[in-house]
Image (tube, rainbow over all chains, first blue to last red; front, side, top):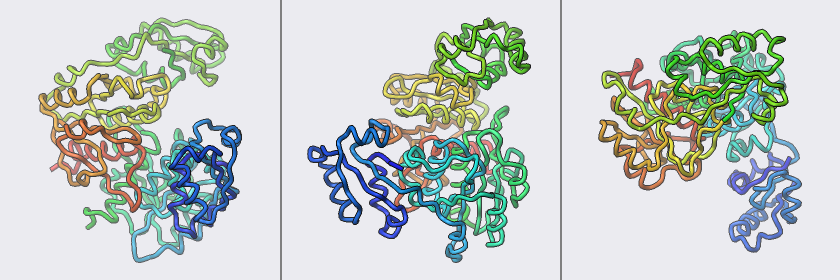
Length: 250
Length: 250
């Protein structure tokens, strides 16, 4: 998998050394014209100093590998995207609030990338996606997330309902976004909260909806029943963050 | 301008007759295979009964005109997108709260479409964009908005700072989204509020920022200073809606 662009590389280089290791970077490929570009030269030095393998190639090769003309002279080659295991959630510290975001069949890569970025910004601890009928983490998703997707464990599960049951065993309360729930403003969140967002047109699947402890609704103007799923995730997640960690905390 | 897809047509047909007139629809073009498709047949009847001009053509012609294979057998041809005039805002009823969304050089059509949809859902009264260095309303934008962009007046101005001054004269308070503002939760909104969102990478331009009555910030996790502009708009706009019209109203 080839990721392109300087922001992605900068995000990778800003991670702790242990996290960089989990990403399994095969190599970082720079355009052979980096000498005329001071920023690229600096990035190349930083990449080397992190112990990553650096190679150079012509801009033509970079375009061929990334299929992207605007690659800014940098490709990061990964073996594969480093999905995390569900168990990670059971090991989160219990002395502070914890937020997990779960996606039930979100299909648009743009939405997955934006939700990953929002989740990191709202301080969520993990993002759970399903392995079937869902957007997976591709270079386009990494790009939309501005590279921030590397700052949150992305967990891929076969069966979302079973993952919800497991989270309940670990003390999580599960809130599903739905058009027929309670006003989200009125919902008190648990210290361990998971927020489940549904597919772009169908919303939550029935079994997923039934497994939720509570359903939340964002009330809207007359005649409108939904907004973009990444916008809805942002509204709910920042309200959750505010209630769990902010000034409004009881 | 050709718009494709059944949702867009359904949104148009759901509008009041006077609004349909302002859209200046040249014709609605159906695939000549609509007889095998009951929904399309129904849509064709509804379109005719609204007094719109209906024509049929082969799927090949539809693809050529819309450059979109997945056009669902329907194109709506507009003369041009019906931008509204700024004066419209001065005529909004003064006995209820009013919200205006202003975009300072938002460039991604995906963001403009999502912001239009969110603005309608949050009950905003108008959306102001700039005519230069900004995404304009294209078929892609209409599509991302799920056709909802027709339910809000979109006003195009040459000079955003001057438009802000005019809104101030009409009694609006102007809130700008910025990384260096007040926590948005703590800001009390005026009954007439305008929210200004900045460009995807640069944020608000200096003159625009200086013209704001207050700057708002969404506090984020360490090391993250921004989320996607359409996600940020959703967070701020639904908080504004909640404060002006919701249960939290003082």
